Length: 68
Image (cartoon, rainbow, N blue to C red; front, side):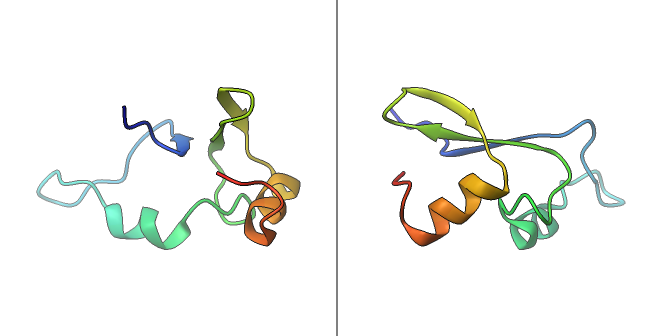
């Protein structure tokens, strides 16, 4: 029913002193592969699967050539 459009695979998560996730930093980084060093994937509805998100795909998404 509801699946994420973007997936980010991380080896470890940053936590606060009280063991809460540091979500604000993740939100600021967004899904720009030039800013994020982790593996990024996006769901391609035409292929019905997750595809690796690289700089070229990111530019196509931002410009509207790839529709999510």
